[in-house]
Every structure is written in C-alpha cells, then in structure tokens.
Length: 330
Ligand SMILES: O=c1ccn([C@@H]2O[C@H](COP(=O)(O)OP(=O)(O)O[C@H]3O[C@H](CO)[C@@H](O)[C@H](O)[C@H]3O)[C@@H](O)[C@H]2O)c(=O)[nH]1
Image (cartoon, rainbow, N blue to C red; front, side, top):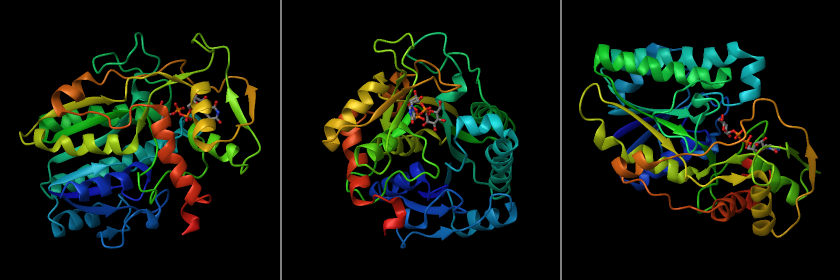
C-alpha cells in the first residue's frame, strides 16, 4: 500500500514509517517539522514539508503519490498545555485535521488511521478500560481527539470514509536497533526524564503524587512499546476495505505499572540510582489508566512483543545512551 504518514517525523510516526517499510508497504511522509525531526526519517523515503492548512497542496500530494491510506499522527499532546492554551490544541488537533480530511475527500482517498488516546475516556468508571466505556475527557487535549473521532463517524456515514481510531495508552521505548527514539521538546514523560536523571543529565526526578489509592501510592499507567503500537496500525489495513467501516481499538499491554516501578526499572536497566524527590500530585493526572486490548488481539491478531516494563525501558535506554542529546547528536 502507498501510505501517507502525516506526522511521520514525530515520535510514533517515525517508528511506524520503519514498520511500514519492514512490512513491504511504501510510506510517504508529510511533516512540517514543528515537533518532528528530519533525521528520524530515512532520506530515501519521500518527504513533504507541508502544512496541513494548505489543503490544495495536500490534495496534490495524495494524487501524485497515489496514496491508498492516510495515517494521522500529527498533533500536540501535552495535557497541561492544552488546559492553559486550548486554542492551540483546537487549531492543530481539530482544525488542521479538517483540512487533511477535506483534501482526502477531494482526492478520493477514503481510508484513514487515526492516533487517538486513552485521554478521551477521562477518569474511567471501571478498569481496565475497554472500548465501550463512556468517553468523557477531562482536558482539552482529550476533547480534541474525541471531537475528531466523532467527526470521523459522521464522514463514514456521509462519504463512506473507512477509518480506525487507536486509543494509545503510554507510548514508550524506541526502535530495537537504537537508530530512532523519543526526543520531545520540552520532555515531560516519565521514562525519558528518569533516564536523564540516572545519567546525571538532570539533577532530580520529581515524583508527582505518592498518596494515590494505588498499591504503592503512585499512579498506575500502561506502557506500550512504540513498535507494538505501530504494528497494530498496519494490521488494520485488511479491515478497511468496506466503505464506511468504523473501528476503535484501545492499545496497551494491559499491565498496570506504578511510577515507582518505572523508576526501579530504569535504575535496573541503566545500572544507576535515580534521584527522586517526592512531590505533590500533578494536576489532571488520573490515578490509574490501563487498557483492555482484547478487541485488538481478537480482531487484528495483535500481540505485544514487549510485555514487561524492563524490556520497554531497555530499548529507550539504547536510544538515549547513543543519543544523549536526542537528534542533535547526529
Ligand atoms: O517528571 C515526572 C513526569 C511524570 N510523572 C508521572 O508519571 C506518570 C506518567 O506521566 P507521563 O509520562 O507524563 O504520561 P501521562 O501523563 O500518563 O501521559 C500519557 O497519556 C496521556 C493521555 O492521558 C497522553 O496525552 C500523553 O502524551 C501520554 O504520555 C504520571 O503519573 C506522572 O504524574 C512524574 O511523577 N514525574
């Protein structure tokens, strides 16, 4: 398949590009490099540095590259920032997506794979989180993703768009060969920050909240390897053939891992202590989020290769050890 990977130079998108190649597809990247890194994409892959707001340009690319399916990874993803600057999130995560979908319909490309999030569920009534739980986001980030999910349903009915929306839990880790990895600016995620503290690049890790109603008092999350996520995106192609198909999948390993367990895994993998400062809760953090991914397993044959936090952290460490300054180290 010819696959347009929007946001293909970003963290998850760049890993998906490599998985597409490995599976025999032809990825084409569209990325305006606001968050993406040009070095995350092999120079042999067609690359279009274009803004989604330029729908005519996107339409031209869809036609010229004879695209069969579009994967859309390009979005802002900081929960806290979405609370303080909602317009930024609605412009990028919703408005830009409208332009992309408009260009797709104009070019008669009607297969779409969308990066959604467990943040669309808000604080879940029950755990683990399966697809049929009510979606009630508690921040603008989650709301923008849910708004797009709802738009996709309308487009499936109105125009026969076939789509899959994947609700990621905590994407983590890096390519097994250590060539590409996670490089956010600013970095706010637990695993890369803990690695930076272990190596001495940062002085301390603030552990947000130790009084949660969880076994060790810290938040529980579901860390899923970025390559495992990517494989689900490719496995779904076979199910997008019928016009108007609507698919939703929660993607996680299903294993709740506490923040303290993550820190211990980093200490074990890196072989150094992480200097932890116990701190107040971070606003907007639900106590526990972990997935029921039975639907993806059943329908897509999706099995995670990385089922333990140590195995995921080990891949992240391989990337960080060889790229202490991220893509600036090239
Ligand atoms: O310096 C830090 C950073 C994080 N944490 C904690 O570590 C856990 C995981 O935090 P983080 O790595 O920031 O991930 P989440 O907040 O769980 O966010 C994930 O899930 C969100 C949806 O809920 C997505 O939007 C994010 O992109 C995705 O990383 C949380 O309990 C944080 O409070 C700390 O204690 N100290």
